Image: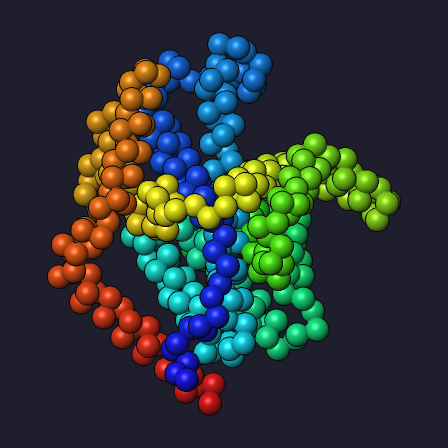
Length: 389
């Protein structure tokens, strides 16, 4: 059988993962639109702490929710990618179609990331690095089989979170690594206006997502059993309520209290706990409702990159030079913002509903571009294969 043929064994479709992915992209659309358009008069001043003034309660709730969007998105990316990757476990690393597709995706994410925000290191670039590291760890696992795959992802994800302690201790204006090229610094610690999602700590969410994805595949026959969602829920609540205490106890018992800054990363595990709770709730819904017929909500989660690119062009005027930010920047009151964000999300829901029609109309551009891209990637791949031989 040709190596290009994906294993015929059917894979268990986890619709709660699709639901989580759809939720993440819709939260992103909502968060970016509100951030662009809501007037400063209705925002909580920086001098007032969050949830301390009832006047800004709804704004605080929105800001709190917005802070979860990126972690959800990064985590679920790792979950989906690894769950599909290990589905072809019987194949060699170089023959696994998901590996080839993964490397293509890495380049594609870097391309769109830098096209939309040249010199910046945003979430697309962060995801690209995450997928690349996942592929490297998966390749290592194929050679060193006595260590479970989830251990690799868990260990690297934990290291990334821990290393952020060192990064945060650096002086505010210190870029790291010192004297490194700017594009390397932008990945790790560079100017704030260029670095929105540095590898430390954000990539940790993707690796923890990969950790979850590998376990989901390992226990795929249990995932849709009634008890399974409670593993997510209980784990999530433990991290949500006790992250600081757990880290503090680890510091006391394993480091004799010398790792004083360890509890400071509790905000990362706190957010990861919320993500586990969300996944658990959606997992439970999936168990109760059973197989859900394909609908526009689930379909949205299958076109996250397309939505991200288009929304960046519409909101920020990337590639076109004019966007919503040029017209409505911090100009709307809450009611106007609510109407606007509802229409904005409705537009993308309709856009995805008609995506097949759009793709059909764009074939005259998409097909030649895809052929060129595939040929270029195959040429690069052949060079590396010849060098290896």
